[in-house]
Every structure is written in structure tokens, then in C-alpha cells.
Length: 360
Ligand code: GDP
Image (cartoon, rainbow, N blue to C red; front, side, top):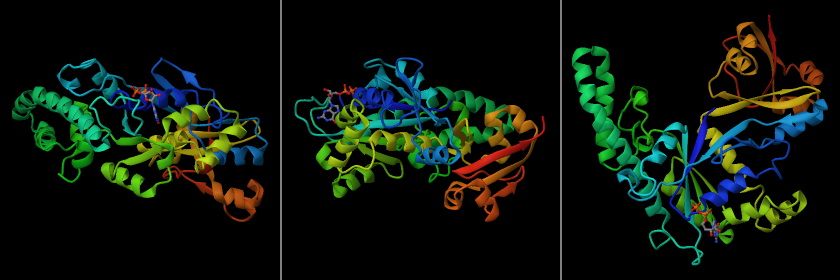
């Protein structure tokens, strides 16, 4: 299971957000929230398509795709040199598949900022610097070994070159995520080094409620992190939302001009940042979303349900979600020629509604 690691300086609203996320069962109904460890939360990927499918098929229940978040405390200025929890958090970050930084953009003077001023730009740089320093330490340790290996084995030349180029980039203060591609660094070569800054990043800006509709303000923040994706929310409001009954939660969202909770956006953007997508199945028992990597083929998708489905794969009967809903039923979709039989080379698309044919 791929996880999203939540990091951020102290007092930016990390715990507020994480607690809200893990109690998030009001509007993201139907998904049994699972607590694995205190700092790990598995939440359902909000997907209104499942409600429509369940309606169409009279499904008894809805099962959303799970998305895992890990609250990683202890990333402070100087962490790479042993400040705070020191290097303890590094192992946690290494285990995560994407890094989500929570950035304070709310102004409340009653909440102390560790550096004495609210500056999203500086906070992002502080965290980036710690991750960059951690990667540079990893590379310093690895390079002498890689040099030796490259002398003995031709096939190690690639990783040595990539590691050297990565160190140069990091020394300029650029993360691998932001700069590796432009610098012509082959990220695949670096995989075995488990560098932190090569993971995909996303950002949550914790903003004041009044700023949620201030497009200019949000655009400035977005520009700080592009091409990484940004999500905006008021963590305090989010934590209030989860304690409200559904109708009152909707009223509050309307009052602040938001179509949905910021947490839902975060879950969706996080899922996408992991490089994942879903396909859908439906029947009288359940309407369900299944997680696959972008680019997965039909047999690989079948394998997510059961390895036997992949082994015995014959073909997949597929209709796009929108085509199915427009037709009104599977039979009508078939009559309209919208249902396709796809073979083992078919690359799945998000929102494909699927029935697999297989031999057992
Ligand atoms: P963490 O150290 O990053 O986990 O931060 P916390 O979630 O513990 O939040 C630190 C303080 O900021 C707490 O007193 C929160 O109530 C407050 N806080 C968190 N989010 C917001 C917000 O969106 N607006 C305001 N005004 N205060 C917030």
C-alpha cells in the first residue's frame, strides 16, 4: 500500500488536519476508517460516481478506494543535523511514496510561528533544505562505494553518473522532484538510493477562511510550489466540519463558498500524486472502486481483485462511466454500442466500469 507522508513545521496545523482527516466519516460516508497505528490513517477516496453506480445497480454497499496517510512529526529546522527528533523521522519519510507538506498561511497572532513570522515561502524552503541535506548525506556516503563499483562493473556507470549529477543539483538547493528531469538525471538509476527529494510532492496551504475565495492570494501560493499540486483549506474549519451532522456540514461549506471539504480535495490530489487511478465494478452486492497504477493493463487490473483473475484473464467487458450513466443501464449501453470487449493489451482508463471474463 502506497502512503502519503504529511510533514510540516510545528504549529502549522498538521495535527489538526490529520485528526480531521482520520475522523472524516461524515461526508465520506460508507468507508470504515481504519486506524493501523496512531500516526497512520486510511481514508476512502471520495468518488460520487460510486453513489450513482450503487443507485443504478441497487448495490447494498459502496466501497471506496483506500488512501493511506502517515503523520510524520519532527521535521524542524536543523533536523538533518539531529535537532528535534533528529533523524528518526527520516525513516518515516523514506517509507512514504509521496510527501505532503502542510504550510501555514493563516495569520492568527495567538498561534506562535516557530520562526516568528508567517511566510509560506520561507517555510517551504526550510523543509526543502532539511530534505536536501538528508539526501546529500546519503549521497556522500554512497558515492565512494559507487566509484569503486563503477571501476569493477560497467553496469554501475549509470548510477554513479546519476548520483554525481544529483549531488550537484541538490547543492544548488534544488530538489530532485523539481529539477532532476530538467537536469537530464535518470530517476530510475537513483531508485536504490531511496532519496527523499525525488518523491512526488504536494502541498496543503492552511489558510484563513476569508482567503479561501481570494483567487489572487491562492494563485501566489500555488506559484510557490508549481508544478507540484496545491490544496487550500482552513484546517480549523475542516476539524469543525467533521463534527457536524451532514446537513449542517453542507450549510457551513456553503457559507464559506466551498463545494466540498478541503480534505476531500486533499485525498483526491494525494491519490493522483501517487500515480494511481481507479476502475469501477458494480453489482447488487457492492459498487466498488479498485486502485491501479496509471498505465496498468486489463489483466493487471484484474489481478487487483484476485491473482486468479489475472492468470486466467480472457477479456474485459468495459464501458466508460459517463457512457453508462448516459445510457441509463448496462443493457442500454450495450444496445448503443458503448460496451467494448478489451483484450490483454488494453490500458485501463480512470472510471472504466468493468466486468472481467476469466478461466479458473
Ligand atoms: P502542528 O504542530 O503542525 O501539528 O499544529 P496543530 O495542528 O497542533 O496546530 C497548532 C495550533 O494552530 C493549534 O492551536 C491549532 O488550533 C491552531 N490552528 C491549526 N489550524 C488553524 C487554522 O486553520 N486557523 C487558525 N486560526 N488556527 C489554526
